[in-house]
Image (cartoon, rainbow, N blue to C red):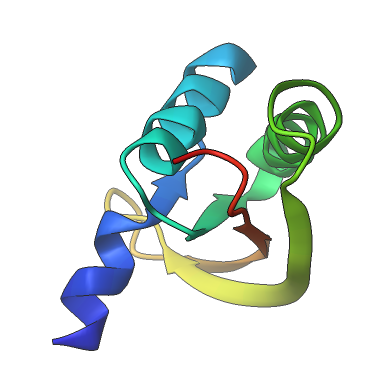
Length: 99
């Protein structure tokens, strides 16, 4: 059950513009979510960092970075069947500033 709840508070960063992820985080904060997680892999890691910085520095001054976790994930290519290792990052943000 906690996994389901955790997924509602998680933003997965991919190929969209950074502001899309910032808006998603702001929406969660405005809906009363106190803690959110921004997850990214590979080239999207820089977008996740940019989004977290924009939230904490510009849009939600009361938001703080609770933790940052770095990892390496094994990803299987569906076409070739080969596996490769991809860097991943989770940024946990906390805020009580927006209600």
